[in-house]
Length: 467
Image (cartoon, rainbow, N blue to C red; front, side, top):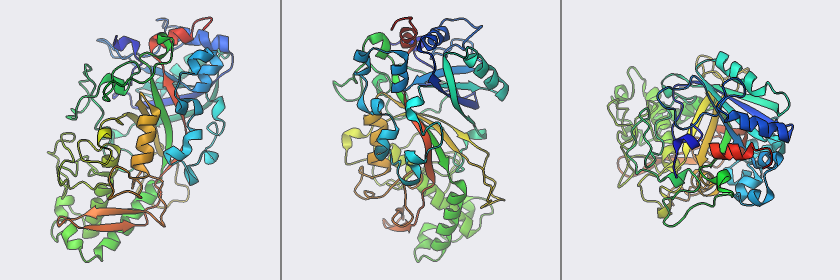
């Protein structure tokens, strides 16, 4: 049975009108008190522990939203029966730090470089997320969540805030495409004309797009059914380094013998009003690395210049698409384009929820020694961490196995690049390409955890006096 009221909110429908987000990273201090806390979070009472926001908002949109995810260590700390724990998938049991090699978390992104509390993953038991319109609401919900003082111990806070027009730190318009699910209507999202995804893409106990396959549901059904998994990631973004690379790439292209094919003289105004030739080349490089112009225009629809009239979601990579094979959005989601692992085109789709942290980059202060930390607090939600999130991260982002023309290269924006070996091909109209080299690593992992997002029924089960 499918009931939106049994799902935690923000899985199938995003909290698009809640710009402020705070993550409370918690440890179970007293298992009995923690189970009482869970029971109180779904009690329907408004005078204590914040109530879990469900997927059924009804006519009245909530002022604030509150949701939780539990790690394997958290489930164990609560006293979940061992027979149930043994039914969870290996990647969830092992946790994110143990799976670093699958995710490209090596070198600067390796777990040994993660700050507290992520340097002690076994202590991270529960991640509570608060969504609100202002910081005062975040403070009020946090105080209510931790008033007990016995159940949960606060290890750390991570906080972010959405920028206007869904722009993120690298300057791109984001939050454009998400899977549409069969039987679920979300009127506030961009219309995405990709095939509708079966509920089993994200919810345990439902059919997937792989014929005859359902992911195993941990028993009892009250615990596993309608649950899902989340890869929570703290991703630090080197925006200053990204802009410097665009400068260098544009300067190199100005001297390239085929630059006229990439940017004919006089075409600069189409890229942006008043842009110099070098500035226009910077934007061409940025667009190709991502697969979209920074205003969101897909290269698959308008490869020569941004087009404010272009449909942001109605495009594909069938035939001779002008979007590079190695572009970030094409690597993450090949849509209907031909790939080596043909059956995998739509099997690794994920629900992505993310919010920037840190102040917006000020181009007037490039290379400031005191440049603040900034990045993305990301959530990548799916029914199988291994077959969806890890497979995408390993096979597609960091190995390029979906197409032999990019195999051996990393994602140009989010991949574990090394300036000494990295490369990216800019396609030309003639069918040739210009190879860019020396891409540094722009995104570094600074923490994270694999969590299970239980249904409301599961929270009641986990909150019972004796599990």
